[in-house]
Length: 156
Image (cartoon, rainbow, N blue to C red; front, side, top):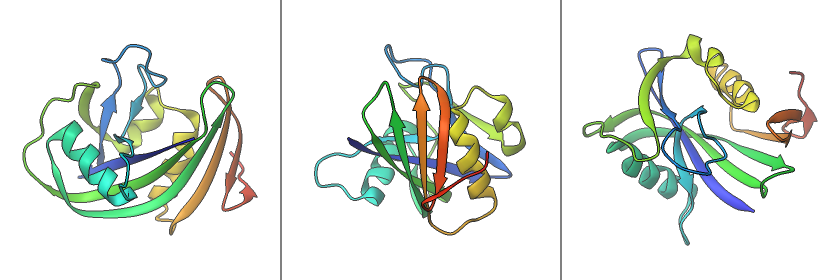
């Protein structure tokens, strides 16, 4: 199992999205996601989110919230525990990312982009400002087969 972070920087009704187009053998190739990555030894979720955001965007977060834990179960990849954050303030200048293209995207356009099916569920939870949540997403290939929110099946 692996622990990762994912952070959505938010401004003017948009999220900063990473179009994953630069890495070979990327399970998220051509998908649009937030910024983040794998924990380093000894890091807390917050430390990982701050480091990964700085590495991928050049920005230093000054205001952020830990929003939830997303458990990904897959028939292809090892189980992943993704710690989900949003941020609304930062310092610095946006830089290029070596993992893909960074683009500010209107929240209303997100579902029209190639994103993971389960991402639509946690975007809804973020938009509804649901307090800290635990979301379990089970995939067969790239098909979402079940979703559980705080231990209860979630209607999709």
